[in-house]
Image (cartoon, rainbow, N blue to C red; front, side, top):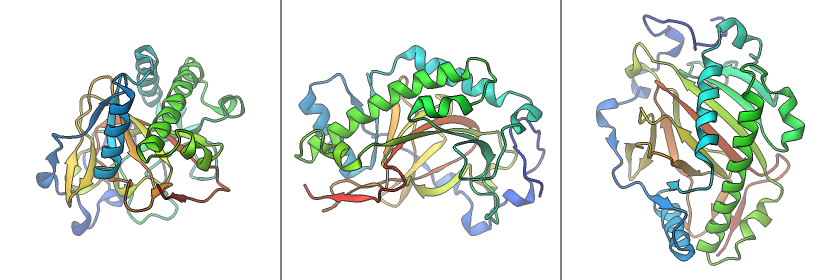
Length: 292
C-alpha cells in the first residue's frame, strides 16, 4: 500500500491494511465508562493535592487535573490550530510527511508503517519542543499562527509537568525536587493525533493497547468523544474528558519500587483529535527507580 495520510481522504470502507485479526479487534460492547476517574483540583490545599496525586498514581496510574495554570486562551488556540492543520489539503500536509522516526518534526500515519503488518487509524504530527529555540524553526509555517500558538502552549504545559513531578515526589515522602533531579534535563515532545471518522470502527484501533515509554504525558482531549480508554482491574474504561482539564498519564520512566506508582496501559479509538505533551529523560539516560 502506498504510504499516505488518511486525514482529508474519504473512505467508504476500511482498507484491508487496517483490518485487525478478529482476536485483536476492539470489543466495543465490553468497554465501560470510568465514573470514578480521579479529578484533582490543583488550587486546593497543597497537602490534599499531594495526597490525591499519590493515591491516583498508586491506584490508577492516571488522573485528571483542573485549575492547572495553563490559560484557557492557550488551550483554545492549541485546539484550534490543531484542527486547522489537519483541515489543510492532503497535498499541503504531505509536504511534511516522513516515515523516518529519527526526525524531530514530521507528519506521519499509524505508528511505524515500515514495520507494521496492520496499520492504526490515525495521522499524527510529531514535534520536539524543548528547547524551543532549537526546534521551533523547523515546525510548520501553515497555518501562519502555528509556531506562536503551539510554542506558547508548550511553555505553559512544561511548567505544569514540572509542578506535577514535584507533587509526585512529595507523595513519596521525598523532597519536591527529587524526581526532577533524577530525571535530569528533561526533553519534551508533542504528538498532535488526528483520528478520523472510521467507516468500520469495530475492525481497527486509532492506537492499540500500550503504555507510554516516557516519564509523564499531559493529554488534551476533544470534549465531544471519550476516545481514550485505560485498563484497570482487567477492564477497559472510557475516560470522559472533563471541561478545562488535562489527563495525566504516568509513563514507564517513572518506575517506583514497592508498587507505589504504576504506568497505565491505554488504547485509543477513532473520531477525534488529541494533543499529547510528553516529558522524558534525554535519550542518553535510562529509566530509573526510586525507593521511597
